[in-house]
Length: 444
Image (cartoon, rainbow, N blue to C red; front, side):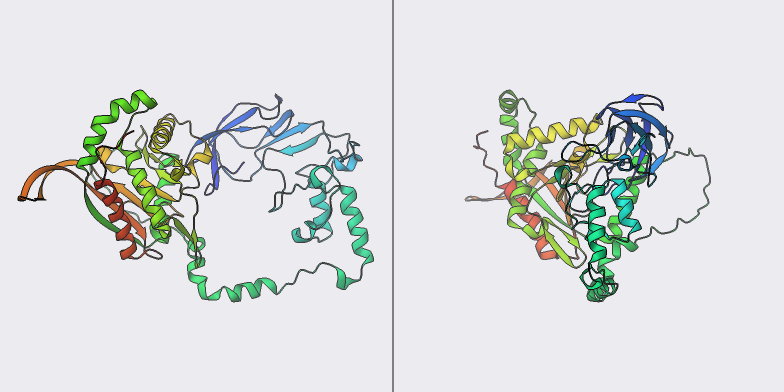
């Protein structure tokens, strides 16, 4: 089961496109899967024949679990094009398969270390038997293609290793983890908060009267878990600001038809809000950050998630990557495209990850304001309320007057572990100021 995103730990098998006995080509779709974020197709990593499927449609499978076996006729070749001996044709499931028998590869990510270096199952099996840790294996020079470690390389290394005095062998000090744990002690509570999180045990209540029982779908269950997790990890605080966006509303009304003719995109309020958020994030970099234990990670990229309501009333948050590099036309195109494909269930997994800040336009539902929950591991989220015509007091050279103005509320929820009220309040006030100061004569 492939990893489909930063926070994805499992996926549901929707449909097997191929059945046992079918021939498959590399990159040909074998099955369709679904996560809490998106539905995706899983391609074959090799050419061959599908021998076995280990889970049925509807099963929820952890990432990394073997879900199918594929028979291939290929064996690993060395850098000079010569095929190795029969023992190189190893399986991912067993330590050794003779060359005359089928070679099996799992429909999953091939074995790699943290740097992305590939190791064949046979090499990993030899390393395990000889007690070679991954840190030591990384130092073994490889003569295969792309620096790959072959059977010949690891056997030569073992021979050299045995001839060296014990002191020259690469040590693995057992006390190191304890030392690291001791140095991390001051921040233990913070660093382990997420890992130690366990949702509260559900209570049983007595229900009476007529009712209909609806089972939560997969996405709703994951949304519920993520929201509970976020409120457990982050210390939520919300600040509210009212903004007079009359100039912005009048400008959009004047140029929206011309904008569509010029760029082929509808000009909604969301990209206008995004533009103000991006500028405010540049001025307040601590908002565009996340927490790792007792460290604050300031994100250099500004990737804005936009909450999109789906036809089934669920919620999904695609991400506008590098929003600070886009002009208004680019932001409008990105927002419209992501929202449309979200509702059509055509988003790619990478379009749902990497967000550094989130915008939720609750005004589209007629809501005046809200208290949004932070998308982990971000530190803040902004909700923009409905724009309404309201009477307001205006100061003029002739004195104060009451006029009809377009007003809206901005609701800014932020993580009080890092962002105090002064910073959180200043940020949302700055977004409001940028929207209020919109020049009605701005050209598109």
